Length: 397
Image 1 (cartoon, rainbow, N blue to C red):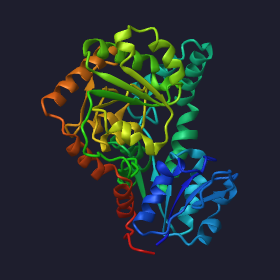
Image 2 (image 1 turned 180 degrees about the vertical axis):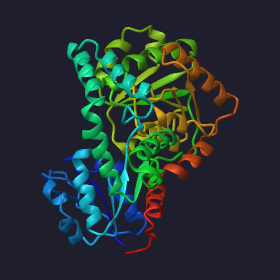
Image 3 (image 1 turned 30 degrees about the vertical axis):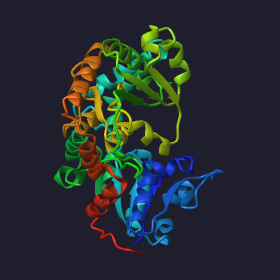
Image 4 (image 1 turned 120 degrees about the horizontal axis):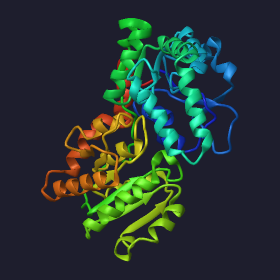
């Protein structure tokens, strides 16, 4: 059996590509004994791994090109974007079964949850309030979506999705939203293709059976306003002040900037914060395995991969309850975390302290959390779920 994955972007093709999303799904198929390679947009790059195929866009839009690979199935990571609908059509015309992965919160159109759809970009404008063009972009965007956008984007996205045999969505809330949108554009036949299929987690994210420190970890791109570094730091500061035995570890880009703020804090708080910076994916489990809680404070996320990796490593999750973070409600649904009702530092810090009390009381079991979520999120489990939805039996090629 031959099942390939495809991402029509010129991403780097090194080991990091194969640790998440399309690349990890390819590796997971291989673990199941299936012939699989990943496809990305040309040009080739110096660190490309042998299992990566580079292709030009016209090739990806050609049924003959796909047919030449003699594939049973393709997993397409193209977000249902209208500009990639010709790729979906070509794969379908080649005779291969097509799984379309929708890495989305489900807030794709004003026709579904209009208030949240509009407010999402309003929040982005607020977050960039120092940029005067942000408000102009919001006004133009809102006008576009209530006119031409419904045809140019919604209609063409529906065309893209109709080519799929299955449409995977990473959280229950996002799945429900996309089903409602698909019902508008394709009735029950299109809506029934939409299935809950989480984003895969690499096999090295596991609980090692060791002890958990009284520690919280936050992983992200802290030089990106979407991750809300200011909210992160103020939340940590409040929690650290109220819990003198608590420590914090912050991982990711932008830690140099965070260090300037942390350096101005009270000495008793500052010395309990460790700013790690960027680490390899394979180095993260050692950090997750020592922490009790993983914190997410993002403005919005489709599937917060850092939280998923933390769960598989035995952490519980804390974040805000937000329509723009639908995966978090899913991630805390198995006695594996708690959400703050408001997106403020005080509310988030209060939930962190409550969650630490649950750990102290024995209400959080890292082995159980890891086991529950590994069974749902591991790359091999997700790959097997995709094959089931495509009605392809996993068997050695």
